Image (cartoon, rainbow, N blue to C red; front, side):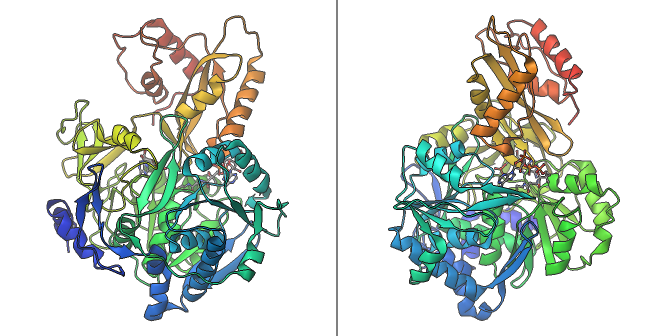
Length: 631
Ligand code: COA
Ligand code: AMP
């Protein structure tokens, strides 16, 4: 099959295309309604199918004779631990933990929030929730209590699952105090918290609230898979929008299983028994899709790595893991390779390991800059596939189908649209633009399976945030263009979302925190280019009249505030006091212009600007501070 034939069929006859792919997963009752519309008028996939994602990911493989194959390899240089779980062991642990959750009253449709480090128990907990037909919401361990509280309040979980600690290189991060603080900040209180005690730190358990993981497992009985409909939610994953309130991306069971199963062969060329490694974290969408669900749905072995690309212990960590477990596909963020390149520019570490099993390196999460692409290809000799996607879609929108037909790559492009995604570049009025012209990247409806159909508890936010800018399309929030051959070039976000080390963050949220400082009258937080992390946030701060404060002291206070509210992961490390911010006459800060200046781009001074001199003033400051670079 050629890419062209596959893609054309997917957009010309999506129902037939996805009906065929749906036949590739083990439903309890096969769907007859392939594509339908829900009560909100939104396209939905496989509405009347009956299934259970955990069954498809585990029990089914055991039934098919894969019970003794490794499902999970855990490699933790930070705790000096390695372990494995076969499909049968994984199924049994998941069934038992589902029993634990059931003992705590969790039923189909209930939410369970997980705040876990990168350990196999995180996967066990996610799959156990799925086994009960309940809905998990995993919160990344690098988020501060306030962020966790916001998510608890929105998801209203019956139960929380956490561990006593995470380990960041050599630092022990105690989770329990953060969990307790989050619960006290949240108006919604869970009925119980299940805590896994790790040997690196012991958590103080609270009587009447906390349940010890091991003790509960010892008493529990295994629980069966609960059938759900194709359109019942599997999980809610919060992602940064343009405001302080994160969006709960709600993912259906059926479309998710079908799309991910398809992607494993089509995009990643993985067969049952192959080893797949996504070096991400279960707290991000890449972790949900490609550490947990897709490899298991496809009968592969997944690697759970608790470590960094460097410093655990060195820049050879990725190559060591690939060699030790015969990893066939490695998937990581470009930042990780920039970090390796910085420490080991000649790739001397790479030469120490036998990585002959490694066929392809996949990158996503942020823009893959051509120097990093070139370095990785040159030093490893492996094909590198840049693919573009979002939390909202759950799988790649553009990429190179290594399992169908590998197309030539072009530096700076994430290649061609993935089957199912009918991509158009639109102008500001929502009209399609000719090839080569830059605009807003949109996907013509219907979106393929796995993409969100609503924001948890807030359909209106989904509609206004994604569907109204151009009727008939989903707008991605990314800008870019398609060349004559249909290759897609992603040029960056068109909104106030930035990507720091492949982590999506909201500058709007940071502004809300910075503006709460008593000395600050107004501020703008923008992303500037960062050689390691792709982008880094900086605050441009206007002081209240009469405030007399030392800039260094203020900067430290602002950094501490963002760290406390969002977490260290925000990497908010610079705040600069300015005398004026460029604004429109109606008082709106011209953030887009600030971003253009930081990116060293040409810009036109808008006629609506209130004080044109403020623009050159800010440009001088940003130049003097070394904040202007060409992206
Ligand atoms: N729990 C608690 N804290 C965490 C954390 C977690 N799970 N993950 C990160 N942090 C903390 C770090 O300890 C660090 O804190 P510090 O400021 O006190 O040192 C801060 O958040 C920033 O972390 P990070 O971005 O990881 O920076 P780093 O300097 O420690 O490491 C890299 C740099 C390049 C090695 C790292 O950013 C990396 O591995 N990037 C790839 C990320 C990735 O895979 N993203 C993919 C998502 S698809
Ligand atoms: P997240 O939802 O955290 O996965 O972040 C999604 C955003 O990351 C996208 O909207 C893009 O802005 C950016 N992104 C992800 N992958 C790529 C890529 N391959 N190239 C450019 N940007 C990317």
